[in-house]
Image (cartoon, rainbow, N blue to C red; front, side, top):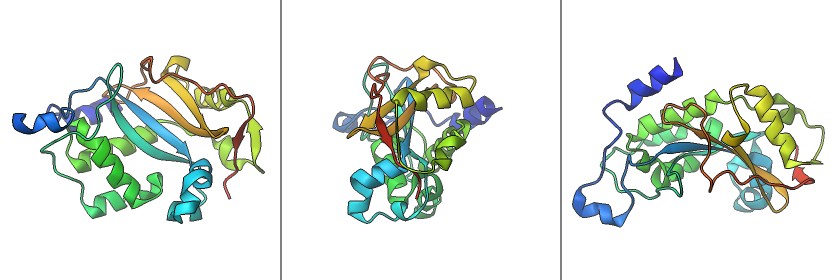
Length: 215
């Protein structure tokens, strides 16, 4: 069912690119191999960046938030593509704040990554939400009684357990400043799990990564 929805959404939209005279300014929209779904642990982002910015995201008890749905090459990725696709409206970006934390996050992700999808803005945001909803975020992390330190591999194992169709070479866990930072999952254009490229599948190997609880 999900494949049919995605196929219908993308029909006639993928492959859009900027006029030839403008393509030199950035990568070509619609020309990529797969997606990386990036889920950030909100308490980590708030501790390292968000609190200092007084971000409204950090006033909410959020766990795994959608960082982005990134078009990816087999090695490397396109960014800041020039595209004739219509931007999402303010209302459409604001509607993403429930899973992205803020309205500004949705707009930034559209500008840097979404335009490279070849989709119209509203369709890219809809696809991003569909990708987010396709992955079960383990409930155990929402009920942490306090900050804990754990092997990053435990986070990966929890996602594999709660997403039976997911395999180890399709997911990676990243750390920053000795904290659990993100879970990144590789998906086809139809949002089915697939093997990550060699430049994506670099797991955090910490045995004592900090995972702050949700306030």
